[in-house]
Length: 216
Image 1 (spheres, rainbow, N blue to C red):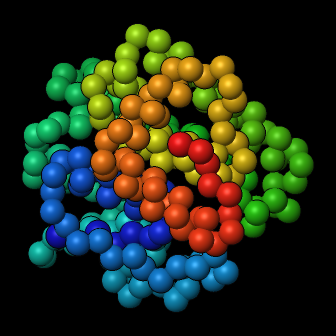
Image 2: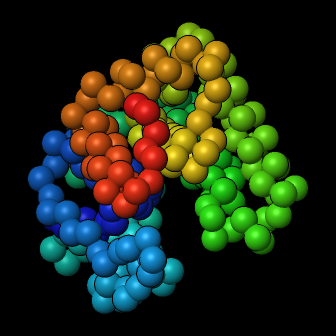
């Protein structure tokens, strides 16, 4: 099995963490990337497999798939234990919704904070993105009132939000003091090798390129 990822790919990191948590052996290949040229030139297998030409891409013998959530589903099928989706239907649906919201509700606001988007978003757009991110942090803080993880047991929902919030932090939108539950949640995840390795590698890449990395 091979996962094509990138040194600053939030979605690639999701796939890497999931495979590591599952104990699934895989080869990781970082596609060409730099802060100056981004993903140019694009990796030929990524272009061939994903119509959006984005990582992550998973290749497992004759299977070639893309999208971090689809990769989650495949990993869960081929190695059900340890489970990263809850066992009962309603809890599983809630976890899937949280994973989706992290990718499609929370993270697009982080994208707005990328320097390349500043002129497009303008001051009002940037302010809206910061406000939306802060509201989401507050919602997740409340969600953790009675549980260690976002959806009960450790799940793909935690993987998704862990990496999305990492990127929000280095883009200038960490959660503010007063989010003790989120602090404890992240600290707990950072004791797990899969999460720590993915985060530490991204921190090292940022710092090697002169960018202040978020404190974890």
